[in-house]
Length: 200
Image (cartoon, rainbow, N blue to C red; front, side, top):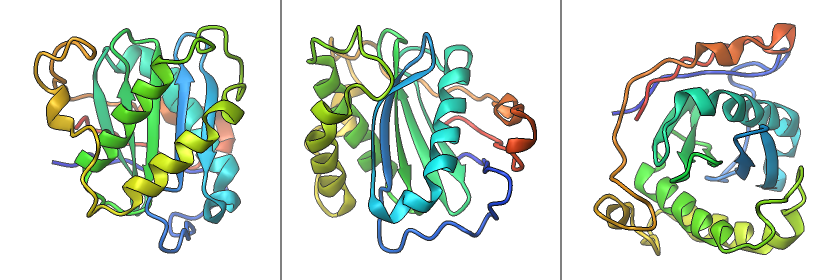
């Protein structure tokens, strides 16, 4: 079952998102401890909403330490699409992908995030990374993952099911938990819409 949520910057209407046929306009990873976005990839069709998307991701990063447990995931409805989030097994890094439509299958979204997490985990530079410092190193990988998973008819390389058991790399199975992240809206006048989030 799908969560409910909505959030946007002031001056941007709920129906203003226009990403055409792009299924996955944004992918990012951030460090939870200091809420720093380490790398992101944005399709050119989403450039007009770049500030808005970054604002949403920043708020998710800040709230995730208190709202997401290690290995936990959430899918948040955002206007006509969604934001799928995955916390890593140590609760140190948050991975997010934006889907332009609600009917994009979540197993593909999480397959993408798991594949992305495996790649990021292999990087020696992840611990000391600064804001956007991994963009150059991860750009090709992020673009390739987006292109692979844009076609939801392609089977993910790492199906979500393979991570739901006793996989040592990802810890225990992801357990759903209900919750509310309304505090994401507490950013002053710059944020006009509310994110009402129910955990997947």
